[in-house]
Length: 461
Image (cartoon, rainbow, N blue to C red; front, side, top):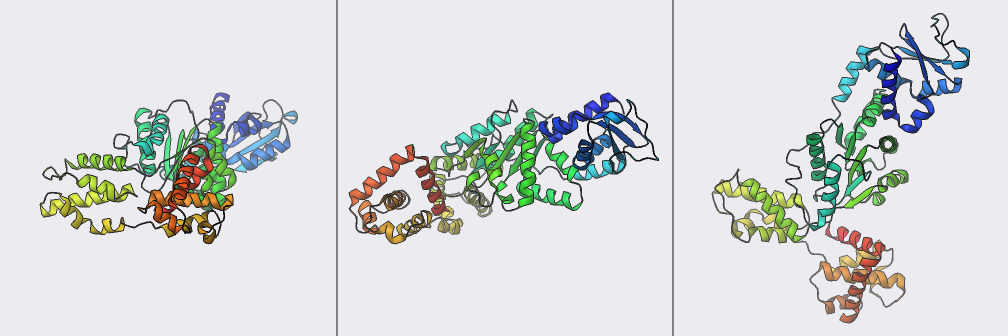
């Protein structure tokens, strides 16, 4: 093994363990020679030799064997006590040694591990098929920027939002775009559950160095539904170290979750902190215009599959209005509608729509009540329901009461006088003032805006 080859291996080690570890522990090593399967290194101190042996020997052996060398163990000699080109004395063991499998075994194991590496991408989920509207335009723009593959401007990119709002679609779209425009990049997309499974597998098979090497050598790491590692302490710790190693190398990390990092229960504070240090983007619930656009896009896609089917005016508008919580349910309803119409050979009109989707439409009719809003608000602010309704004017009660009034006005069809009566017989002008006050605070007080959004999501879930 030549010094030039060792220099190339050192670059790989830098990528695998990060700049700080590399500067402290690997850079001081001086390769001396490779003889009889023993790679001899000169180190400044015995302590450094022991530390490298315990923490990085497996990785060094892995890289050497992968590079075509047959190395079974490492030997570390203190520089001051060794000649410039020491000879390996097989009768006398070196200061520190580590055994390693021979090259063919490592190559076979490495191939098996790499075969499990990436999750499959859905060919339907591209930027071309993603419908952009006001609720998701920021998330779409951020995803587009990352997919360009240029200098890392925000790291990590965290996309969060409720079920069926397009997080996974954007993750797949980024991966497709990077693979198309930058095939030289090593892009790894997988779910948090798959990350955890592979971590546990590596622990069970005692192949943690393979795991660390694979996950720290990617150019773009994409982890979907990161909330699933919450409460899994060992997995979170490994994710934390992987995250830090990739950031040190200026590699792009993209994460998705069902809520903001700070709101994920049982997620370690240090992991939350790392996730919050980049760009965190919320995919808001869809509005009517976006839902209608999604339906129109799907109808165009179905044109080639069902060329003989026609859809009456008003059907798409009806569906966009009635099915408002989940895009997957909305798309599933349209798929069912087209399949049913093709089987019975009828036009898709309002009558067929209501017959075919009766169960879906009934489920979407759930009405939010004033009483339900009052209970949610009192639980959220940890006050009694009687204080929400009662006459007390303390700020700790008045502000939650105004939030509840605002939500009643926005999420129910009740009139202002009726809402006032449900809040202890208050006048409609009091309700109007409370609603207006919350509208003003939403633009100036981030905490109030977050409270209102969290409560709205909980009520509409």
